[in-house]
Length: 72
Image (cartoon, rainbow, N blue to C red; front, side, top):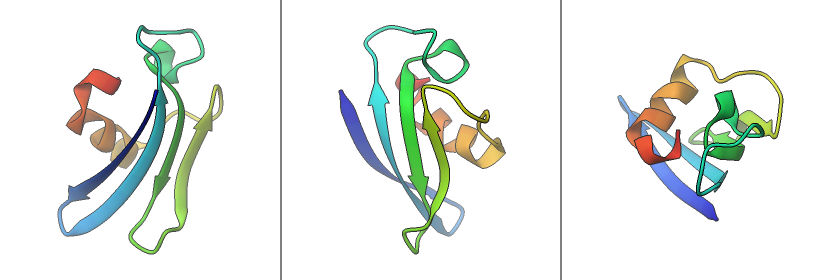
């Protein structure tokens, strides 16, 4: 299932699109439920992209994910 959300951290807005499994997966971020994730800043610039692999999320991306703990 795909989810789209807006997140405000401080005075900055972030938008994310995530493909979320029902259960944790080896393809998810840190073996979690999110297999694909794209985070955009307030200008629409991609600041993070994960597609069944890639770099682990930064602190700001982890804050985005913490807002919706059911994703992580």
